[in-house]
Image (cartoon, rainbow, N blue to C red; front, side, top):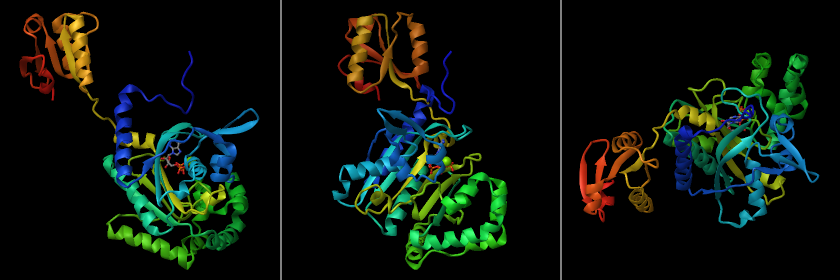
Length: 409
Ligand code: ATP
Ligand code: MG
């Protein structure tokens, strides 16, 4: 018996209405901000992620599904910003009127330890906005995320914000952070020991309680909580906070928020749910002003976010299965086929009994799966009529074959 792979799941027909709901709302909300959908391939050159996500990240170091074909190293995408940026550059989208707003949805692959809210194949829906360095774009992108979550009916969410500054101001911060952490270096976990040299900012992101205890020491907290960002970065951030305040968006400043990917600068944000267990982040995003250039494109500021759709689905819970609009009741297969096709061509979903069961049995089935029964018995057939029965109210009308459609509302 061959089973589904560890960390992967079937999305079964009875779960589909939730997925369609998430996808339809994504299209509606993101389109209302002028964003267009983009679909990029599921595998890309490994180098794209090494350069685009960063080779000091967990994603690139531990979590990628990489394979070789014709001596090329390929990787199943672990996230989609790198792919969208590649496509932006390759298709000369910097020539389009700015800003270029793109959204996507689709499967991502990370070799992680599967647990609640963490899979090896999972889905993300996300947005990337290119071409705007002003914090108006930061505000708009954060609003896109919040409004999408609102449209999904999700409540009890917290928005956490931070500014990572620019590479220049961050350098000072890194030096100071390394200085105060140095005395504890031997006590840190293996990951943090390697982060210390390669990517000290990521120390703050460590999930080990022992490391977090060290980072909560007063002299280390003094550095973390201190203001390290330069005047320009600080103005950018304050302007963003001003817009959010004006709109009544609630947020908390979290100076430990550094995000897993290397490419972020200035604004980073996460949206967490109070109704999920330990994997409680539903959305992560931030500004990545140097990524387009780093991947060989023209200097183009950008900001975006990605959301984990499995986590969203678990918060949405059940959605009512949508019923068929109509079920044809008939003992005449030819007539049932004709009527069914007629309704389908008029946009009405319907089925009929393919096995020639008794009328009562057909009606029983109809009331379980459809809103209307369209009955064509001997009398109806003789008079060129059909009976339309509303299965919720029990109301039934016998009408002509020409106009029965308008009784199925
Ligand atoms: P985490 O800290 O949970 O590992 P991350 O920083 O790796 O998250 P991002 O790369 O920012 O996550 O991805 C954005 C969102 O995608 C996350 O907030 C989460 O909702 C979802 N996500 C990330 N990895 C997984 C996974 N393995 N399984 C399911 N959802 C995931
Ligand atoms: Mg992760």
